[in-house]
Image (cartoon, rainbow, N blue to C red; front, side, top):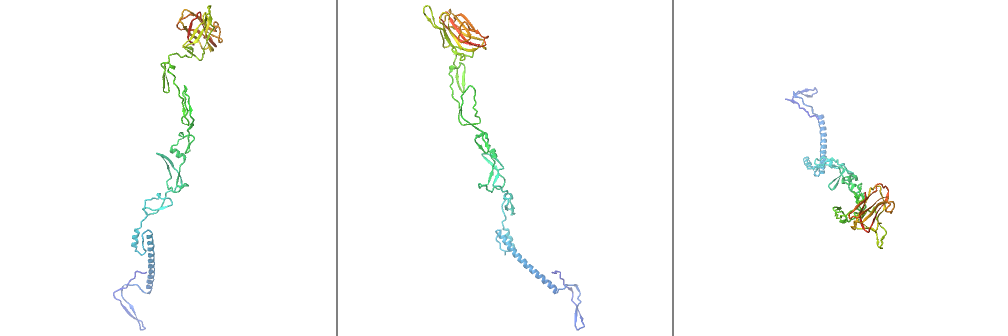
Length: 417
């Protein structure tokens, strides 16, 4: 629509009448204009009418749009829990919008499950990024702290239930065993705990008999199913131990009081002790009858600390100390006998045959190697020696004793070197 209409501007309108020749006149405008105005007629009015009609429709449409828009806005505000009528003013609607409470809270996307949305104090809706973990989640690691085991799980939401009805974390046996410190060295071999097999074997009880050698019951790292029994023992009496010596056995102590002699390995006989390796047999010859009809019986016998010998008179070989078991002569150099008078008769003569023989018994005068001597009695012991270095086989040893009268003798030691 035209909006720059101009009026005629003049000081005074003037017309000149012009004769038309037909009895009519036509006024002619002869006004002097300072501005020529626009023409305004039906055409312009029609154009204005059309414009007004169009504008009127647009105003009606706008009014309807505003009315409909207010209704929608009012409904939207009401949905936000602030009641608003469509007929209120825009100002009131603006005030009601201020009353709408936006989303509140401090949740962030990592705090909200994936696939879900939420708002916080910003009022802006966002999508969650927290992972949703499977119903059975394999543990990432297992550690022990104090008296508890701790299984580290995957980060995320554990909201799906396994067949047990609960979210679960699976822990490998090896991881649990390592964290708990399970050690087969400390478990019976009949047990298996978290995949770790026990190593401790079982061992039955037993009885250990004490000996002179140290004994070891191999029970280290074993489980005893019975007791190990060590029988008790009795300590020997003090008189069985040499004086000046002490016997200590497992905390028990006996001080020796024995002052006698104990035979050594080279002794055949010593002061009442017979070496069991060289058993001795004592031999007595037949009795002797003198001219008056008196009988004299030879006596050869063991006494407390000696071998006692009494002849049967008249220079008979009536007494013998016999070693029936042959002895290997190869390592032996000398054989000795210690003898003395038992009755103090120092004037009587005694003959001693000391020899080694082939066979159990033989004549006193026919030894393989021997010593035959006559001597007058004496009260102190005398050592008689025979050298046998030249002998290198097994032979018997016999000691013959004879006396020219009925006297007694004592032997306290027989030995070899």
